[in-house]
Image (tube, rainbow, N blue to C red; front, side):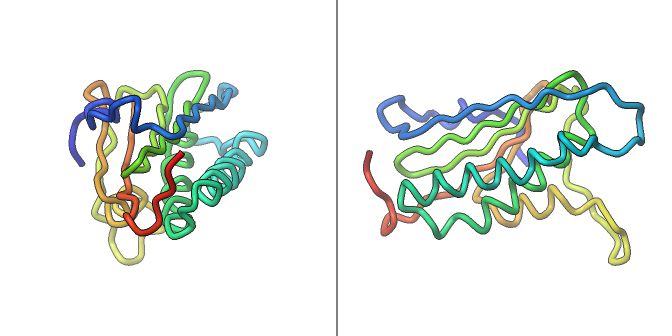
Length: 157
């Protein structure tokens, strides 16, 4: 993972086709308690919204990997984030899809090395393997990744 932000990618406004930002309100919960059901449902909602956007823009080849990454990033944010909200962003440009999740936690996310029998701890490893590039903001609150959009499937706005 690299330290930086989606803005550091240097995307010029003219190249951005779509920039969706959604905020999930969180209820306070004690450490170790499960995610509230109504919050957990956002993982599927964000996958469906993102899939619809990718299909609309003619990029169905990224759907499967994007859905997996969204599941990992949003679930991690809901489980480990701090504060009263989780912010999700999907930025679609001429040559890149960027996904960003702000969980409000000042603890910087990192890729774990899980043992074969561990039931968790592989989320960011999966993100790093499926995406073109991934990183975390300098303050640790945002985790993001990008996918290169194949030139053969790009549809201009």
